[in-house]
Structures are given as structure tokens and as C-alpha cells.
Image (cartoon, rainbow, N blue to C red; front, top):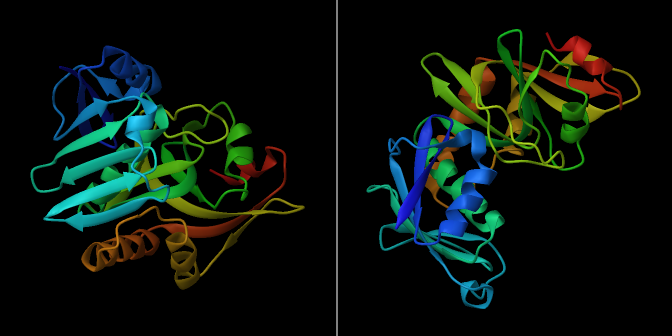
Length: 263
């Protein structure tokens, strides 16, 4: 059995399998985030089976505790993850979307206790600072990302990774792609502003109150576990992020002129 290491947001997940074609697919998918160095704190062992055998018989995603471990199931995969030992198993077919979902969910579980969040948001670095553009599907994340200027380093057009570092928060690049289909850069920078997207007929950056910013941010947090303590941790982290960051509504048009406001 061989393995590849995938490091996102400074957290490494070692994915081991006896299927070389599966690991090769992962290394292509996560190319900029794959590391040959075995420094990962989380280890997943993936049992690759044929498509029919992979079905868990439940099309809806379920993330729940069972006997002290997390059970993560969907129609296309079954996974168990011991958060204390940081070890897990996955049963799926050769499908990048399945392992991609498992990796995202495990990151949300790890981030909850580490002062971090996965967000429905595009993000980019400009002039040494990170800007997070939050919005559900159709809000304009892809449109804004597509028009990013040459001096902007795109971290994600769909799923952004934010984690506390000392007294500030860092935004990190992720390989999780939206409509652009292009992984973000494997870089990070302090978050300067949260911008909540609204397509409009003019480009305008409008400051918004912290309470409203928190409400909007929470609607864009990716968290799947029905666990009261962890939900509380996520809520507290969202509040800290809003409290130490500039918050705006970004009204923008279809072109790239809105980037003139992002400095």
C-alpha cells in the first residue's frame, strides 16, 4: 500500500491505498497541494471498489458520531473517522468527487476546534492582503474570480479556507474548484475584508454592520456535523472573524471594474 500527502491550509492528510491509479488521480487533482513529505497529521486508508459495491444505499450526506467516531456516508461513499486518533477509512469507487467530499468534511471537523472555517466564498490575495467574497451559488463568485486582475492571486473561486493565526485570520488557497475548474494557489495571507456579493448595475463597496455581517457569514459556512459543542465553536469562530475584519457588501457588475475597489 502506498500513499500521497495532501496539505491544505497547513494541515496534511495522508491518503493511502493499494490502487495506484486512484493515487495517481489524486496527485493530478491536488497537484499543487500534494507533498511527498510524510508530515501529515491525519491518515485516511481508502478501499477502492467497483461502483456498485461503493453505494452506501443513502443518497443524502450524513455526518454523525457513532461509538466515539464520525460516520460520514453518502450514496457514493462510506467513511469512518476517529478525530482523537486522526485516523480514518473510506470505501468508494475511483471517483475524485467522493474523496474530495470526504477531505472537505474532515477539514471542517478539524477546523472547528482550531479556530477555522470552510466557506462558500471566493478569495484572493492582493497587495499582500486576502479578500474573501462570500455568496451562495449564483451570487457571482465565479464571475468575480474570472475577472481577477493579473496582480491578484486567486485562492479559490468556490470554497475558501480561513483559520485563526494569533490575533488575525489567514485565508489559504484550496484545490476545491467551482465553475472555473481551476485550483487556487497554494498560498496564504491575512484576511483584510469580508465582502458579501450582490450583483448590481454599479460597482460599489458598502460597509455593513457587524451583526448583519455575522448573519450573512453564517449562511455561507460549510459545516455538516450535528454536534452542539462543535456548532458553538464554529459560531464563536465566525464571530471572531467578523469582529476583527472589515465587512462590506460588494455591489458589482458583470465586468472586472469592481476589482478597482479591492485594494
